[in-house]
Length: 265
Image 1: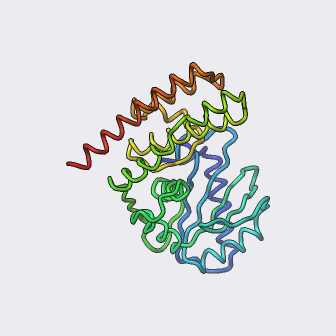
Image 2: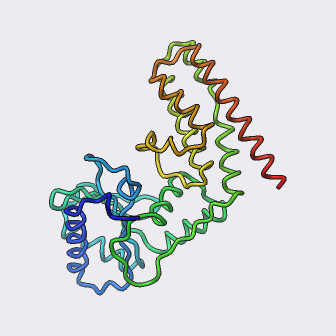
Image 3: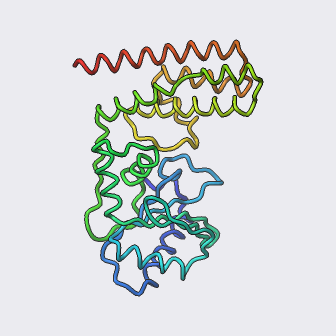
């Protein structure tokens, strides 16, 4: 992945911030990898996008860097999630979302995914950033992540999404004239279709943001349903719901047939 999606000024500022954090840690950092992920790595960043930065290393180095970030940066928000320590930082006018993660957590996430134990969207997005992010600093152990998006995993996830791809609740909400629930149902359908689109492309899930920019690369069957949904633009009615129902039925039957055929090969 190139650095074209990050302006030269922002890249220089980012490197300056990272070098300062490392220098002020007062520790010799032996194992550290800094990776820009998120919208910049995906090539969909815009004026409003912050910079997502993953700092990955052994636990001792990560603990040291967390303390250094606190001391040398304007930290706006600080929290932890299932992968590690998170903080939002302002430096020289640039908004950084910094995620400090130990190598052991990265390896565990990879093992759990490759074994089919954890196929969640959050794990897929996390691994996508590790495998495809922009490396701006690397020192120490080799940092490579071989993600096995096997046919078994693709088949398992497709089966899961096909089960929840239904509009029966939408029909109910339209009959009740329940606008909020209609929107929620349409959002669920759209997200499920996007998940299916990624899988048919044999790609890890990498988020719903800027998803309309990805639809052109999707399987035509998925693209057809999503294009119809976007053309409706929230003006759903019983007649359009019936069209959507037929399109989804056709899509599901086609994918199920594809899965059955591949299982016999």
